[in-house]
Length: 235
Length: 299
Ligand SMILES: Nc1ncnc2c1ncn2[C@@H]1O[C@H](COP(=O)(O)OP(=O)(O)OP(=O)(O)O)[C@@H](O)[C@H]1O
Ligand SMILES: [Mg+2]
Image (cartoon, rainbow over all chains, first blue to last red; front, side, top):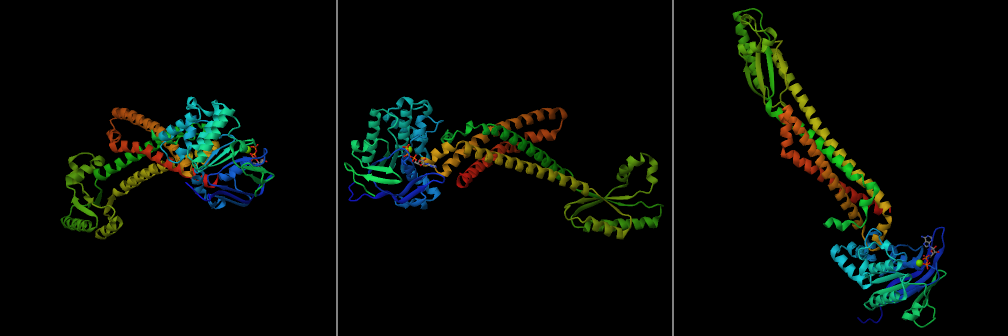
């Protein structure tokens, strides 16, 4: 699939977020994400990486400016349409958000089940994906009985099982050893090659250079785009 | 089983919901028993409807002395009375009771004896009523008193229709009780669903984040209500069945054929089976609706 100019899939325009009795997290933030791109989202703790991702998966509204998702103004999206937008977005949450009473495989199958896919088929696909991330031994264990790294891989499997158009990962390499971290990032790269837009939030500012992807650096309410191999600023 | 499909939220484990199947069982039991009572009552009504034909008796008072002229006049009056009765809308046949029949109706008061035949006897007419809704008894009384004052109409319809009214109201009360029981079941499941929504906020949020619709989440509650309803309904049905069997056992001793007949009636058993299904269906609707409303306006 060759394209001269990829379509814009996410767009922030003078976006501001001020929590009531809380901090001004974003102030006139501008950002444009093209379909099929791969970004690392960096910034100090508390800069708003998780919050920015939250706004993309429609779990937090802005208090100023505009957000466009898949060409639609985020504030104009109706309550009943939100699930269908979310199905296009896979999220690895910083705190995983696994459902504790469901087994690993059932957790991973969840995004397929809510789409109405036959539960048996969903479980088979989930089991396959869990094997791929090296968790074939814990398919029927509850997430709480597993290590942080194992839980993280379950969370990642759940984020990618629905073949989302956009993959948002919040510190996906935080709890795993280097070998697994590499494997996970290669998984994201593979997905990116098949057209998935990927945004990985991380503390690790070495990753953008290692993997040759642009960096979105959050600081003091603004986003700074650092292209591959450069230190150039962009609005 | 396809019910497994809707167990993403661990509603079964809720402490607040654990008592609900028992409440449903009790409600189904009470509803079934109320309907059975209504059923017995309606069987009684149909028995009265077909067993007794409605009757009136008309009494022309006895004359004092034996007098041939007077006797002739009485024959004329009897004819006129019969005419009036037959012309009254809703009346079927009119029959004049023979002397012996009149005597036998008086027997309890006068005792048996030959000398009774000399007594002046009243004339009794037995009137069969075809349609008791049409018969205007007060008009009939008025017309008869014009022929001769003192003619009495004894109205068996009064107490009979009184009992029928009572029977009908017993039926209505039975159905009202069932309605109230269904309302109670519906509110119980609606309230426990609201509690569960709060308890399982975290799971519900995750479901939302992976793309679940309000309807998908509401269905989890709906199918939970189905499981609860079927479980409670089965227990309630079994309790009602045991009650019937015990009643039947005692009915044998008492030789009350009616009770026996009602319990053996297949319509009763279909009602007993339908009650849990009905209650369950209402609970499913209530769970789904209340959750959808809460998701839309509260959460
Ligand atoms: N619901 C909220 N109410 C008030 N303040 C909030 C809320 N959510 C986030 N914040 C604030 O927004 C800021 C950004 O938080 P966020 O979690 O996005 O940071 P982060 O960059 O992901 O940090 P970390 O690297 O530690 O994960 C913080 O100051 C936080 O306190
Ligand atoms: Mg964070």
